[in-house]
Length: 115
Image 1: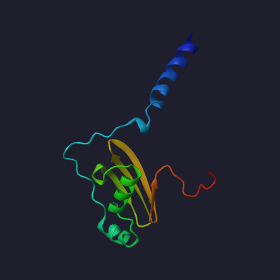
Image 2: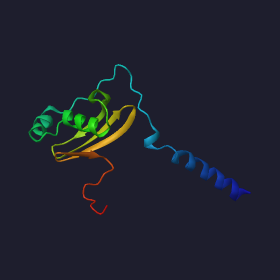
Image 3: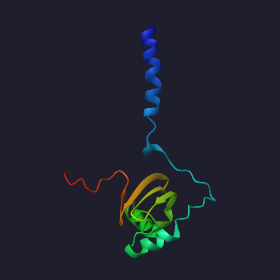
Image 4: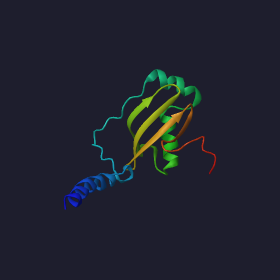
């Protein structure tokens, strides 16, 4: 009986937290939400290769078949060579990354050519 109770106590929280996936989460932003401001020095550098925040916004709008105004940045973490971006697009949380001047979804691998 003790083993059964121990197994149930151990398994239930594990199964409960396993159900919490990123795909199910919706982003509910307040009406007065302010997007984080990108670093101006990095943005002026990235403007030379068309990899600014506004270029990413256009890319995401086309990728997700929505308007540019529907793309809201939640977090911006970037350097000259790469960047990570958390976004809210039409109520869904998405993550994108930049490698050099190329934007892609965070879970994509540009070097995986064995598809």
